[in-house]
Length: 46
Image (cartoon, rainbow, N blue to C red; front, side):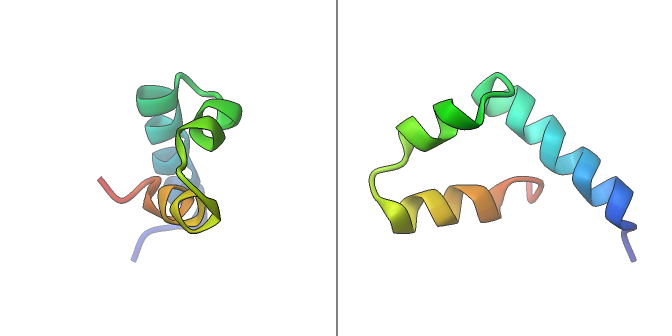
């Protein structure tokens, strides 16, 4: 089982790697609200 801290680190690593650490960039790349939700849920699942 993955600890919460480890999961948060994985999420942040993805955010930095894919979106240069910028949540605004992630938001801009989303096509709509559903896509934004999917992108957010996908962080840390690589």
